[in-house]
Structures are given as C-alpha cells and as structure tokens.
Image (cartoon, rainbow, N blue to C red):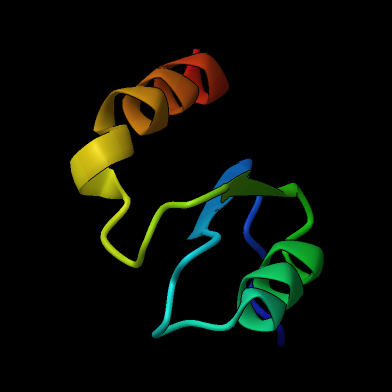
Length: 64
C-alpha cells in the first residue's frame, strides 16, 4: 500500500544550489499531492541560512 502525504509541503530550492539539481526538487514537488516548489533565485544549498524567515513564515501560513 503506498504512503500518502496529506499535509501541504513546500519544497524549497536555491537557484544556485550545486548539490541538488532543480529537476530533483521539481520531481519531489510534483509527486506530492499538495506539493509546492518554492524557488529562490541566487540562493545556494543552505538557503535556510539566508531565507529562514521566509521558510518559517510559509510554514506558519501552511499550517495555520
């Protein structure tokens, strides 16, 4: 039986990420029933260090 993720999920990807290709983030977001890809131009792999507030704000909004 497949596992189903019922909670909305934001997949964040930095445009300058040299470790995870954009295609991987796109595929993950596409395979999640409520997945949304959030692209951050110019950010690298550790985009939480520079965009942590935006990520937390999105979590608060998504989870209500």
